[in-house]
Image (tube, rainbow, N blue to C red; front, side, top):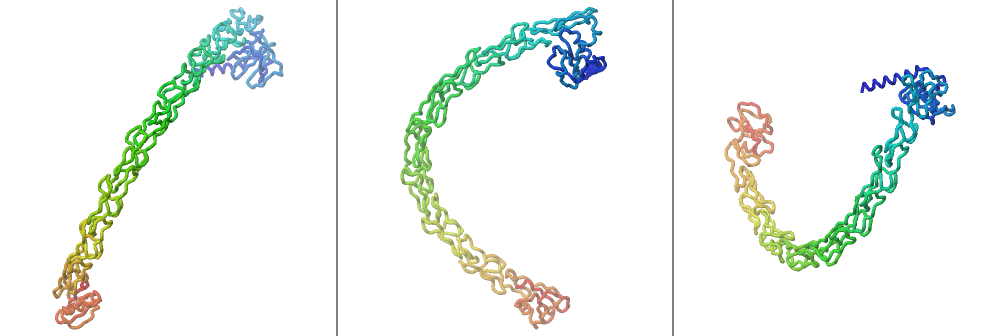
Length: 572
């Protein structure tokens, strides 16, 4: 590529140099050109060489147009009037009638005929063809006839042209090509254009000079070649493609009653056609139907349906309460007792489900068992009463429910159970009575399955009770579910506030409390009881020897050797 560009760059620079340096005629007009007189065109030469080419053709060249950008030389057959000039910046116009002939050599006095030019060969002048007449072209100075498939209409052109598409030429030396006749075409040029091609079967051409044939349109066909029209498909046939040589039979399930059609008509709903190439359809017989178009057969009415008319697109569904278990039927049957059908189009009847019954024929629903009743089996005509210990609060029960723990039922056919009252319980399902809570337990809520144990600090010595009793004074109970309380004994013990324990009183040691209140001379038991009976006593101070007693409203002991402080904050 680099070498190619270098070569042409060199050629261009050479031509530019020649254009600028050669001595031109004083008649050279820059920026002007004329149209309409060009007889020959020479490429890639300088302007003075262009003038020389014109001088070598004195019989048919009188002036030149030269383009300084493309280095193109146009030889004109006449000298133009200034009024015919056309402005173009890159163009030079020059009449050559007064141009010097010094550089023409032996051709200076030679006159060649039209469309020829003089050449100086070995100091002798001779004329060679430079522009050949119509139907010929120049080669090596000789005009040669255009070969078949080509033509030359204008003498000023230097080559033959290929016959265009849609035309042909089967002879040499012609100045025009002939159009292809109707039924023929030509889609190529040159050597292939020596004759026209035949339109194949399935196509036609009704005009001349065409590059292709027209395919037969849908609904048409053509079985022969070289035709200028297509034929219509007959009734019962169709053609959905283009360029076809025959028509097709309408398939089963369709028909066509017109000619020249591209499709067949589908058999409508309720009709069918089992054969090909038909012009009509047939009605579906009784017991059958067709809900689709374009079918070769009819469908049989399925189970659960019937049809007693012809040409139908559906079957009739059996109504509710009726059924049909066979295909192709015209009637439906009533459901027997113990059964039902709640939908249309049933092929069989349904058993009344558990929890319901039906004693009549042809029914679309079953009756639900009422509250307090049940039916565990399918297809029944009656319901059963719930036994004792059971109940049914809903309709349509297939079984009865056990009375839950905490309740009972002693009668049949009931819709609910009775709740165990307070003081009683029932731990099992399906029972007919409740049981009293034993001693040591209680129940203060109805409908319970168990009794509550008396909490520590309480007791109950009777059965069937709704609450427990608090332990008496100076008694406690540290266990659940007891029938008695325990006494708290010992000088240095006390019962806690919850009466759940008998614990020892804590001796702080040799101390007294700063907030002490002297309450007299007492025994230790009496001093302890005085504090227990007070609402704001948290401890006592008792002499280490003797009966001196004081109560303390606050826990603020200080060391003192002759008294002991006893903490009683946790005592009841």
